[in-house]
Image (cartoon, rainbow, N blue to C red):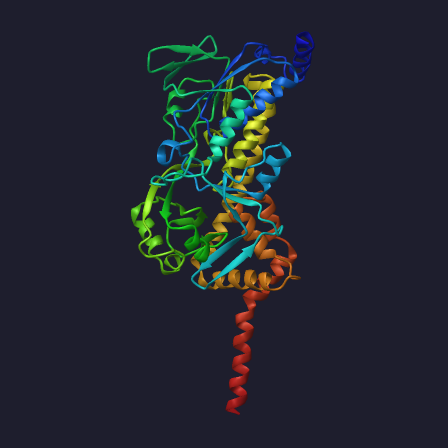
Length: 470
């Protein structure tokens, strides 16, 4: 069996490049270090071990993560709003990964868009509760005893069932000798690995240890977010928020995006903005439109953080025996970070098992998956810039509200605006697809009709006034 596997891998390598470094491959006994045990690290470990089994390749995977996702608060948290898109849920199910009820705190039926001109509920386009609100850890600080299961913990347990080992040892440095990565630890010991997969995200100090690595390039461009958990009760949250994510498009300078997500006994507030600071946070939380969505005026904030998010990909998140996945390398702009982690992790694992672990192999098979996300993000930046225009001009917000409200009231009406807003907020579709929908003649026609409608109304009123004057 071993000789068959080696022959198969050799054929895969021969299709890529004749460079000597193309021969760098995983072999029986190879050791892989995965730094970061969140979704990217777990997906990578899971698929690498699963694919390795198909060709009878025996490798060892060590996942380094200091957190325990069974803990409440920061010690078991990945600092995330915690929304999984309907697209990703379907993809995971196709892979045999079905999220249990103990992981999903709330099934999301709709998104409610709040503006100063009105609020409109946009139902799931598929008519099913296919979006999940969940915790990346075991819940917020002061969450108490809980029956919840961490999404990240669930994925990590999935990898250990496949044979991965979770290591709580603190990494203090990385050294590269003879082309191999050596991880150094607090007890002054060190271990050589055949492949280093970085899935630590942009909030980890580990990124700073990679100077001199094969992928030393300009780090990802980031911006700061704000995540806060407000304590309430399930009954109160259901009465006021229901099974809906509440999104706010308000004319607040520097605020890019904000939402309130119901989860169990808590409401999660997520904000993204330019130079986000306490002043911007207080302005948003004190806005009358936002206050109307809070259970009570005395609802306490029991847990908060201000993590960074990746805005722009690394130009080369790979090298010989090194690959960077998830937020550490490339992720989707603002939305569906877990989906991007899944895609980049699976592409990296497939490359490592079937193509090799050289720079050329990752460039050939891993980088195209990253580039698709990066190119789509460029379209996403344009889409969010257009959303900024709607937030700036009240008459545009009225048009957005009018179109979405009419579409939700009439079942036979094409949901042009509703579809665009749903996909923008959920991350269920690529930004390129959303842009094409916005260029649809039906969307343009309805938008133009609503744009001219106030003018027609004023003309009619003027005619009526003239008739009365006669």
